[in-house]
Amino acid sequence: MDRALTERLHPDYLKVYRLNGAITAVISLVLVIGYLALALWKDWTLIPVWIGLGVLLLECILFIWIFPKVIYSRFKYELFEEELEIQSGLIFIKNVLVPMMRVQHVELETGPLMRKYELAKVAIVTAATTHVIHGLKLDEAQSLKRRIGVLAKVDDQDE
Image (cartoon, rainbow, N blue to C red):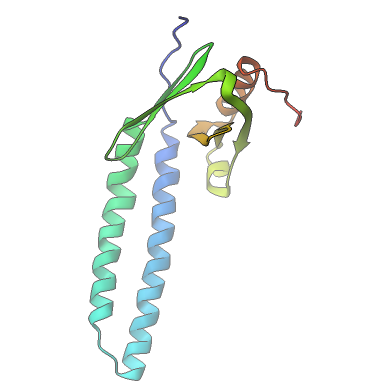
């Protein structure tokens, strides 16, 4: 079997993941402040504010510091002639082997934050599910998309 190199996510993906966590935390903080203002105006209890601040602190610790490092360190993929192997997981490690003959099409996606860092994700679609490889440099993602398309004998109708 033709062995490929084990590939990992680009380090900039950590920045994007952490920015997403920070944006979510800011939205949560706005909600807590909104309730605080309403509670002070209506003379309601402040217990939900303290609970909200505790949840916000936990959210920041998990989604800005811990989860990005763990996801980054555990994710890897290998592309072979006959299959694609993807390993991912946070607590439970999942290892998936996608046969090339089962691939229906391959998609390349970028969002605003990922475009800022020139990153993309490749989605490999089979009849059963979609397998996603996040956090690749754009040129690497385009190359992977084309290579999977060739190996899976998928017509590239976008180009």
